[in-house]
Length: 225
Image 1 (spheres, rainbow, N blue to C red):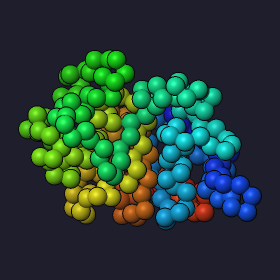
Image 2 (cartoon, helix red, strand yellow):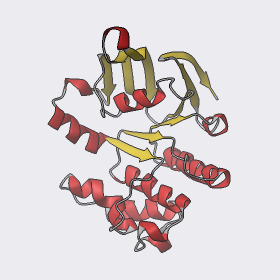
Image 3 (cartoon, rainbow, N blue to C red):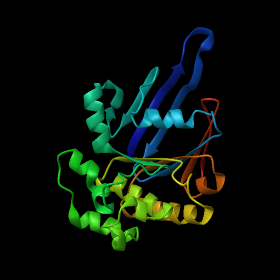
C-alpha cells in the first residue's frame, strides 16, 4: 500500500541569476513497511528533499502526499499538527531534551499532542532497543549510540505513518552505526514501519530495501538492494 508519493516536486532558492534549483521535479513512491535509503553527495538535494517530505519547508511546485493527504494543501498550523502525528524524525544530532529522562524524551511528542502514551507499547520499544536499564537516565549520562536509540524510540512511540532519518549515524563510530541501523531495520520490520533514510554512506545504504540516488536535484536511479 502506498504511504508516500511525490509528484513534480521542485524547490528553487533565490531568483533570477542567483536562483539555485535544489530539486528539479522529483517523482517517487514509497510503500508501507519499506525501508528506503536516499543517497547523494553533499549538495545533491537529498537534505532539501527530506525537508519537503517532512513538511519542514514548502516546495516551489509539486506535491507530497502522505497517508492519502496532500500535506501542502494544509495551512501552517494544520501542517504542524499533521507532522507531529504522522511523521517521526531521527536526526544525527539526536535532539534530545537534556533536562528530561530517557522515558520523558520518548513520550514527549505524544504528550505535546495532548495524548497519553501507550505504556505497554513504549515499554516494548524500550526493551527492544536495549534501553530498559536507562529509562531514568538523562541524555548526558548516555553514549552516542544510546542517545540515538532514544531518538529512534521517540520517533516510533507515536506510531507515525512515516519515519524520516537524516544521516542518523553521522555522529557515531562505524561499529555503533551498524548496531543502530541494524536495530532500526529490525524495528521497522517488526512494526511494519515505513522508514526513509538520507545518507551519503554507501555501506549503510545497503541495509535498506531500496536505494534512490539523487544527483543535482534529480533522481538518477532507483534500485532494489
